[in-house]
Length: 371
Image 1 (tube, rainbow, N blue to C red):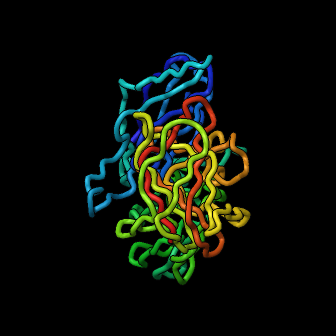
Image 2 (cartoon, one colour):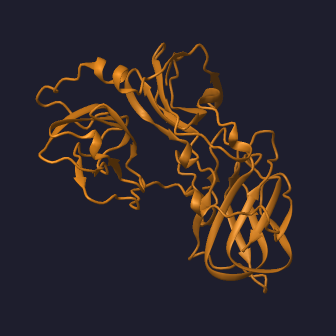
Image 3 (cartoon, one colour):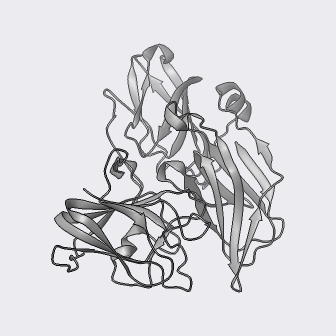
């Protein structure tokens, strides 16, 4: 689905925030700005200064539906309000975007492909752009095969008019099965709708499938869902509430806990918003001394504001002026998991909120796990 609307004039950088289900690409006056990927828990994107009546266009792809648990009501497209927030001259202004025009993108061969009258691009044109890519291959003998798409971005494939399936470079499946009954001797047609754009527009056949090859995009975030611990049945080492205000606070565990991982679950904040920030964390050993943090790494964070570099590793970087901060609009509770490097015995946690006045993003109710 393509969603379009007109924008107000915004003279400084701003942040677009919304829930998209499941993969959104954002354009302003036809220029690509960036993507928001639900798989990575992304909910916001930084926008450049905007001129009055510039057109915002968002292409949203639904990637299947969750069919179990509370998430079974898995709505698609733009889910909830879409806002733009800008800070200018120490004032924060928020716009709620309304009056959308919506256009569905057909994904069947007859309406989306045959009516496009696909033609060769003129010499010098960029073949790596998003769009429909059409090619042909010749066969002397027909048989089942697998076509490899690992150099492509994200999209769908048709062979001789038959929908073969979806592709995505991250994998782990890099091939599509092509039954021999849908191929023919001589000239065969292949069409790829790539909504991201290929690294190289090449397809090749192979005798065996490629089903276990991950090509994850590099990111500073720590949101691999496989690293998220299941804490539903776990017993917290301590739970309670931090005090409001600035300065260090120490939370002591009832009994020493042994474990390699620290998980701090933020259930609520001192103010009404759901944005969380932590400047520094320390753990104490049985002698009341701070454990070394040299081997610490961030294992998982459900939300991190990458713009401004407010990622999870900022809670142990020896700088009280930097901080981990969740994205605007991401819902509570929030979870940060740190790998201590080896099993440690922990008796207390030291917590420092942001150093600014009124300690923005301060945590109120929490649960702490050592496991």
